Amino acid sequence: MIYLSLKGIASKWRKLLSAILVMFLLWNYAIAQTPVPKETTLQNAINALAEAQGEWSAALAEADDALLSKHAAESRDAAKKLSAEAETKAAAGDVTLAMSRYRMAVKVLKEASAKALTAENTTKAAPVVSRLETAMAGSDKFTAEDTLAELEKLIPSDSRMPGFREKVTAMPGPKKIETYDLGGGVKLEMILIRPGSFMMGSDKGEENEKPVHKVKITKPFYMGKFEVTQAQYQAVMGSNPSSFKGEGNLPVETVSWDDCQTFLKKLNEKIPGKDFRLPTEAEWEFACRAGSTTEYCFGDSENNLGEYAWCTSNAGQKTHPVGGKKPNAWGLYDMHGNVWEWCNDYFGDKYYESSPAEDPKGADSGALRVLRGGSCYFKPLSCRSSIRNIYGPTRRYNGYGFRVLCSSSVR
Image: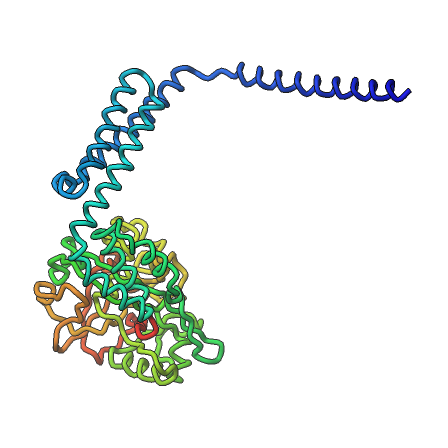
């Protein structure tokens, strides 16, 4: 009786396994029957091989043969041997092995180049290593990141580099957005702007926008996300001089450069320990361009300006609430149009011809101050990233406003 029972169970299992086997075979058959054009398969293989060959050619072109001969000749020769094997395999039609050999060759050559570079620059890199250690000890992440990038080019395969990379990555950085409470529910939002370089000015603009010259901003700063609003001005000053009064988030206008200084003095008293000020022209244009090299932050065509700015074509001869248009790539609004924005600089007609390459601050003296960005009264041509306007520091006009910068809170 037990025997018959076990026999029945075994029979059921055999039927189940048979059914699973049949399903598996049918599935494989279905896959086998799916047509794959031979042309497609062949073309994919050719493309993949060409890509691998291109990677090898690029690595070979970038390699410094003299440096490799001096410090890593054996590894370089091994890479070339692998590439020769790849060529042989490709000629024989073994595409898979050819691609594998090419990629191994690239890996070996790049490692050899890094080794040779490190051996050549070890002494030269010593002061850069000291700068990095100082930046890390001072929790200065921006300087640490920049210095680490220098070392990546000098000693990429140095045994200390993995530790440096790990420590710099783990360093806390500043907030991307700082928000300050001005009281009465009014906030001041500021966007972190990292240091960097850009081409200042324009060959297509006015004479005072020339010559185009390279400028490096060496320190990070926070820039107002919006132009200073009437609500913000009221919260700090207790008054609102604007002509276009209305919503609290309209930009404050009819303010002179001197008025801006009074506002900033009171803002620094209200929020002690910071250094709120007007941006320099260079800081303003750097932030406006946001990495762009074109006439506007979004490109060269004024046809798209209406998406980013209030100017003569869409403003109706009045200001509009801040933030109503698209921001630039760094999150700043109304850098083009709405109101002209006062900058800290004295105006110098020929200043661009002798401007310092790093952190220029404008002419040493003068009777005029600079405004940037254009306004709701101006045509697109006068709302470009490099446009410069000038007036005396006491001049008030309902197209003049400002935005604030703060640098003291950035580490």
